[in-house]
Length: 294
Picture 1: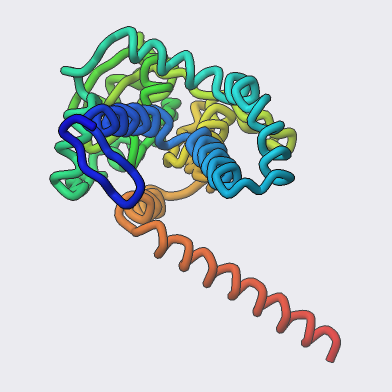
Picture 2: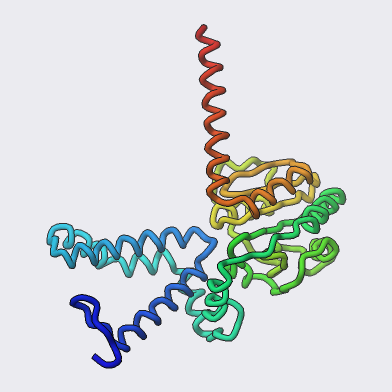
């Protein structure tokens, strides 16, 4: 053991520390790449199952170890199938060797040392731009992300990295602009990219009046934890989408309220609010049934 120490029966050497550090950096980069998408949940579940397999194998529980071992035998192939897009993006990221770019491991270290402090978002330019676009029946698709720059989808469009402003959003979605066809991605008060391609939903219960713009926004809300705004080019109506749920024909005031809730309300508080609303609906239904029976 060179330049190491001992913890119980474990001998920790310099090579082991370096090995752990490399794995930590690798996992942090994978997490950053998948953050904000459904793939991160699948990845965490797969990683948790693998840790259980290691524990079971160490305890020499032969039957359970054999069963999990068979699953892990095809686990690599299953991971390649499940994460084919993520693996491709990860290899592209490694090929760029972006250690000095935004999103590198050093940026992650700075993030954790700052305790994850984030600047409060200024949503006024967004709501004012959406209101003006709706008034002129100009089609628009805006993606707002609270915890990820959504690099998967940003790289499909044109990078901008610009401060959000009403005039800039209106200029992007002007029908004569080369950037109007596609979505704008906003993260931390900045327009990350424009003319981005979003995944289209595969649901069959979509109303006929929803066009490709709304279907792409709904698909994005199903695949990520972002907040999507769509302005209809035919009717000028504003729709918002989150977690696969559509709020159709909302006002600019209601849009502002929804964005504020998404960006600034803690996730636990959101879940508690949704639970209370669900409980109220159940109580109202029970009272209605009781009244009808009486």
